[in-house]
Image (cartoon, rainbow, N blue to C red; front, side, top):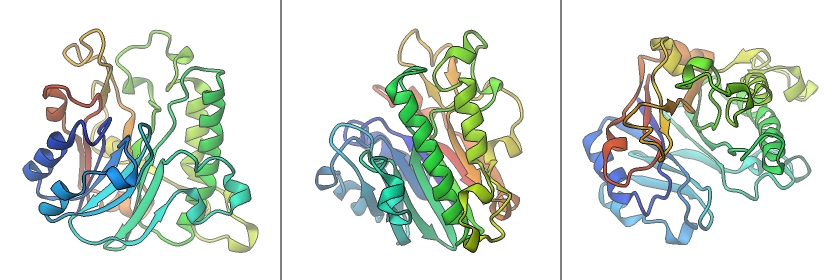
Length: 278
């Protein structure tokens, strides 16, 4: 089974890019999109349905938005943190449409668009850290139910130094600040603090692992390049789009790769697809 993740930076603007990519990659079972930037009623469903795909969308006008595009119907599709967490816990963190998941062949595929954070110390930065803290609780609940979890999407965090083209001002840059990295590392390990005592299961102590790093250890591989300063041509990129797998699924992973070809197109998204196979 193959699952792909791609921040398309507007599905309507990049529609032909996405449909052409699906035609060229028929082995992809589920394509997870981020930043669709369209309300559900205006999502361009027909071109995908004509190709035989099933769509599950969770969007908003002009910003954010996530979608699952699947060759086969998905089971138990969930939208937002509120699908499994109570309203008091979620608060305002579902106002932005950033979370969707569904089950295929016993694997829960969780598609995320993590907030960017804008700049260190800003209100949006604090929002990002709050959002990540809630994600930890959400993952804890999810891992109570399944041992096969693929968490993918645009994480807006480069977890390692080699995930960035340069070391310059790394600690003071959004997406690589120590607080973001430490918070996200904590998110990836599910411990007692994220699971109610009466619901403790084998999920306690589970670490979600980076599928790409199972197969590729060296730096220089990126999934996002700024539109400015000829960043793509000069390979001045960041690896911020990931697939994190639960232990059982990580063991089954056969390969994970970044397809840079869509970034070469005219008026492309600033991100490119990342695919995992297990």
